Image (cartoon, rainbow, N blue to C red; front, side, top):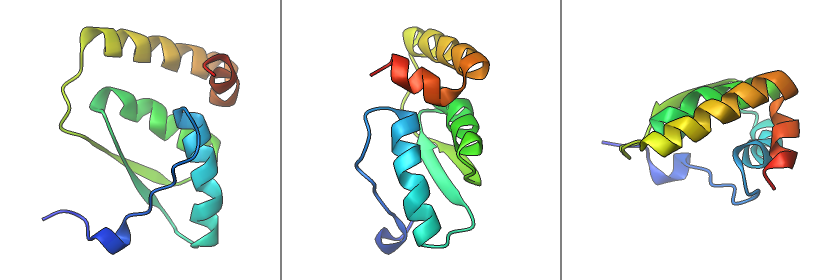
Length: 96
């Protein structure tokens, strides 16, 4: 059960989702990957897909087993709202 370790690529760059996915985009292109699976907290997956789309990455998401808190959901709702208006790259600059 699970994903074989050799099929997992970790890219430890960036301090937020946009920076991390932006750094990943170059590696995805280098490896000639058609699509990627992103694993994160369930409440965060919509924004991950939106950022991946903005970066031209074909992505699928899978929620982790971590439970969401009300504060996390509220923060994520605000981040998605602002990101949809300004673009996630600009939102990334606000959160540094």
